[in-house]
Image 1 (spheres, helix red, strand yellow):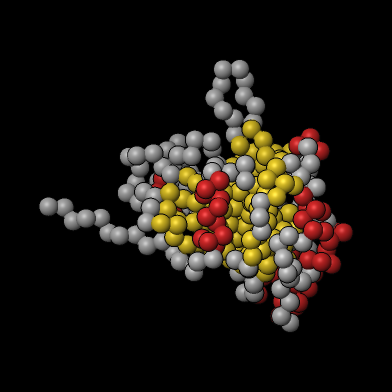
Image 2: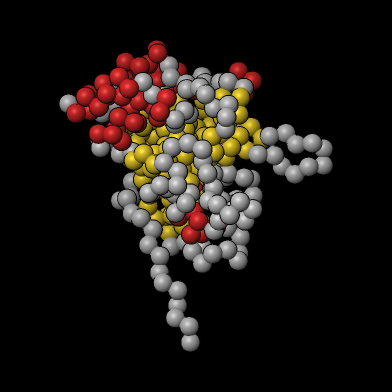
Length: 281
């Protein structure tokens, strides 16, 4: 954590926002629909289900094909920002978002690119240890996108925070020359800035699940700008700055949970350790 700002109202009416959070409509008499992140009118990601006892989730959908970079602020974001309340940058990206309360924060991250099903994958690792495999498919949840892991730390003895940066489109769509340009810049000491809209989902399995039972705090940063920067940082093993706009009303969490994030994000990174089950008598 570099610096966190105070909650502020950003955004435009939902009908005018390029990115918004929606509930999928169900037929009369049906249960609640999926939570969705929508970009330019098309569902882009399915999010954790409303109940809070289902596994934490971000799942890219087939209609996720757009990024939201803004040319007007590209020069400002080539290097590091000094303050999360940078008016020009926040106002520019705020105009893409639905009206609501957001907490701006500047984070320094060292991203690690994760391919689902391979080493370091949260969905086939920590999540399976808590929820087990999907009872129908017999497989882990699958996010349908590579993503970046950046940070994790203990919340308390019964909860752990996991942080993810999720690109709107896969890194394979990035322009190779631009990635290499950022690798070169970072090699000279430049720390560029990416921008994301963020949500916090707190998920806890129902009783009777596998033995490793605890609450998973999923802090997810959906990239608005910085796809090439994140890949370059992961490739070069360099840090990048992330301006996060945390949407206070769009996650499966309450205001008290969100208020804890600056202190949690300032802690040292720590992986969760599990205690062996007690010996039977």
